[in-house]
Image (cartoon, rainbow, N blue to C red; front, side, top):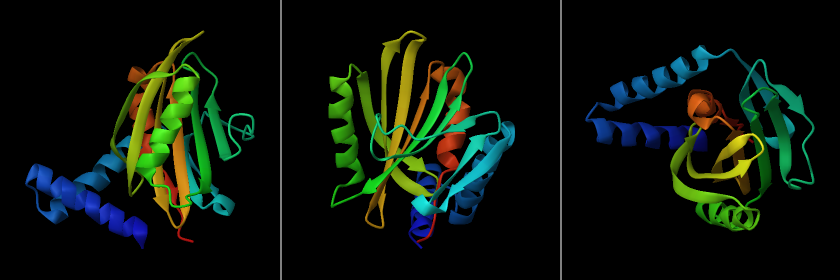
Length: 186
């Protein structure tokens, strides 16, 4: 029920911003999602035990979560190519933490690791309104750019982390990854 309520909120916000009717704004959001998903072949990966599903480009490989990165990392997908693209999913108890405060905590930890140029904004993770945190750091592959989406729902905090060393060229794929994320009804 929450996902539908959040999607309806996104539709209403789009209708207000564009002057479209609710129906036209809904149709526009759904068509944008479909268009993004049609450009790159994706496969659906459902992790029912963790309460989510994500659509991953078919060419990406699934790897074991890396507990040295975070004890809350529950899924890891990578594309071994020039852009070194990654998709990580984190899930932890929300314990009264909001998406905004989780993004701020993440920023503090990441800043200590040498990341910079932080930007916090509103975003969407699938049908859910989310807090988006963008940041980057120089690496051996150039500039490593990351965007993380935070959503608190049902007593849990989900974070989708998307990284690329060619974020500009990968923007559409990263958008599709965020758009295709689904928190499963529990």
